[in-house]
Image (cartoon, rainbow, N blue to C red):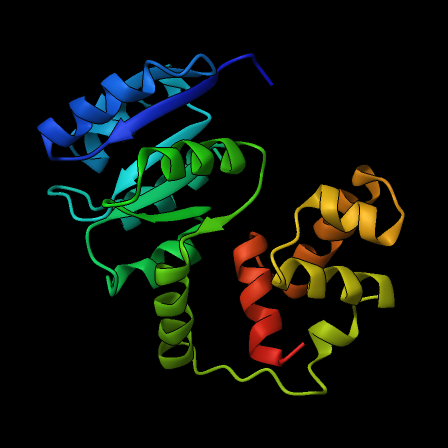
Length: 217
């Protein structure tokens, strides 16, 4: 990882985007590498700018944030996406999770919340504001008709240690906290989490946590 977090801004509200840029440029560990007013414009610049984190609006013309997130994860799988929205009940947030977004914030969040989200997502953690998390879980319950039963083959393929780590992920534990609680190294935790994702056919911690919550773990 470099000393600075390379951030790209994608939002069709010019004043909001420029204001955000000014604030983020004051942070010593952040570098703004590009900005765009819609998803298509961002994709055209993506490979050249190579951002670590993209702050992505959902409602944009030409290409919305959900469609753009899908394409970002195909082009640059290691680039992290944080979705920004003005709506608590934004229906597309459900699709954004499936697309692989790692963070979900309302635009009325404080700057401290935003910079914390950028830093945590950059480290590989998922971050959802509680007010959005509630909406997201309800959306999953409504839209995802797949019910995870006790005998679910994917879950049963996990080892006991992996099941334990999955429970801690669902409780919001970071890799460091999980490692300390279980008395193992962070590297071992990361390896277990990678196996959990592969076994459960999920892409990130948020999806793994929702899996655990649906199952009542």
